[in-house]
Amino acid sequence: MTTFQFLRRLIMLRPLLYVGNALAWTVIYLIPIAPGLITQQFFDSLTGSDSLKIGTWGIIALLLAAALARVAMIYVGCITDVQYRFRMSMILRRNLLGHVLKQPGARAIPVSPGEAISYFRDDVDQTEEAVSWSVDVFGLTCFAIVSSYILLKIDVQMTLLVFLPLVLVVTVAQLATTRLQKYRAASRESTARVTGAISEMFGNVQAIQVAGAEDRVIERFRRFNEDRRKTMLKDKLLGETLDTVFTNSVNLGIGLILLLAGAKMRGGSFTVGDFSLFVYYLTFVTQVISNVGKFMTYFKQMTVALARMTELLQGAAAGVLTRRGKLVLAKGSRPAAEASDPAVAREPLRALEVTGLSYRFPDTGRGIENVGLRLEGGSFTVVTGAIGSGKTTLVRTLLGLLPKDEGTITWNGKPVEEPGTFFTPAQSAYSAQIPRLYSDTLRNNILLGHRDNDGELARAVHDSVMEYDVAHLQQGLETVVGPRGVKLSGGQMQRAAAARMLVREAELYVFDDVSSALDVETEQKLWERIFASRGNAACLVVSHRRAALAHADHIIVMKDGRIESEGTVDELLAASETFRELWYGDERGKDGRVQQD
Ligand SMILES: Nc1ncnc2c1ncn2[C@@H]1O[C@H](COP(=O)(O)OP(=O)(O)OP(=O)(O)O)[C@@H](O)[C@H]1O
Image (cartoon, rainbow, N blue to C red; front, side, top):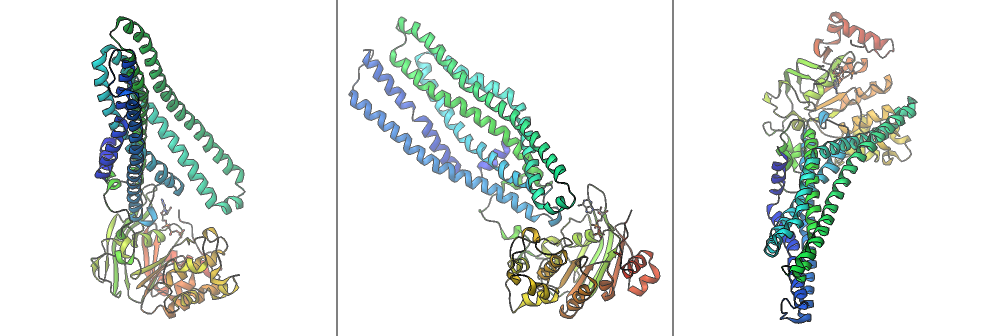
């Protein structure tokens, strides 16, 4: 999509409001035509070149009326401008956010969260400015046409001298815009890097401290800031230089008028009133020049902003940005139970079948290849394997958190077209390998908006073996867990995440390495309790630990992104070397994990 097309589509988001805004500002820019003509009449009457019929008080009344009319119109214009700006930019942000929320969870944004925030904030702001200033350009063009007509009728040569600077400046600005665009892109990028680094630093304080990496991290941050300083300086310098050219070219025009007017007035072809009219309109010509220049700058910046926002769409058409709609996040734009795949009615799980499932990470080419599995209602299946063998990728692709390259998924024989929206409660609930907690109470972290019906929360706390921890936390479930749950231990975080999953009724529970930070006894309890209380729900568990493997009806062993072998513990102990290593590694009390090459 070109920048012009983008601008047009943005205007079409709220066409009536845009036209209203354009009309208001056109009137604002046209009103000064009247005082210019009144002043011309006044001065001509003083020098006797013309007679004044309405008298001095009449002139004052007319000037006052014009000024008041302009003030009133500016008031109206501010309202229409603000209404249009905010609606347009909010629609843009809504569309961006809606698209991000629809992406497979694990690949929602292609940049760091800090950078994404800068896209949402700065790039949308730049776009808003460009669209808003396009209205001014229209009004100013109308002013330029009407005033040129009046001035040309008085004196062609003088008029050209007034408008020559405009042509000059527009040409200079055009020549400079390519460079300005380059500088703008560089400064935006460096700002995004700084924002991204801040968010990474705040998010990883502990890791930085533990690694003693403070100095190196600060040095890296300093480098990013220095880079930003340089790129911003270039950007600002060029912007200000262009501004100076705009302003001074007008001063040059005034000087030329003064020089020429003297000679022409002596010759009698130019009156004092004409002179006042030229000087009066020149003030507004300054506005024309600087505002047209401003628009051109914003327009170029919008080109950069469009490219960056399109990057956030990860391959989707840029038209997504300007999709029309109400200013609310549509229900369908986020995964929710109501948004589940309509092709499949919500029904108890009899069998979930996966065939030929593949996903490869574009940057590393690693992932999973041609994986097939079958889960029956009430079954307990464990996916195991060495580090990096593809266990997490398998469950994430199955759940639609990563976009599958190939493969089919069926639920009770019916195809699941959109796993990302289908695999949500009440179909399934998921607990990720890395628990994500928020700076809120433990209760709110577990419930995450879910209503605590019939003591579901207490049951979930019990099933995730958290009752002892809750009793010993200073304020129990009301304890605020700190940013990312830093006030909890690794095992507590994992169990809080498990409780969050278990508090929701589901046909299928998916646990990704939920017990890796638990001691043997707690883990044993966890599986026993889940086993006892899950009813007929199926469990798909990623684990290499004996406590989980021992409960399994079926075990899948992953290697190099493929299923290496599968079966029961006894079958695998007899048939799979990888499984034996995991099993006996765990028995020896070691981590039991084998690094995959
Ligand atoms: N975000 C990513 N980008 C690129 N490659 C990735 C990404 N995440 C994982 N991989 C690669 O995909 C492969 C499978 O990773 P995966 O996380 O599924 O392994 P795993 O068996 O779950 O490992 P672990 O036991 O450590 O959790 C690995 O080779 C890994 O390097």
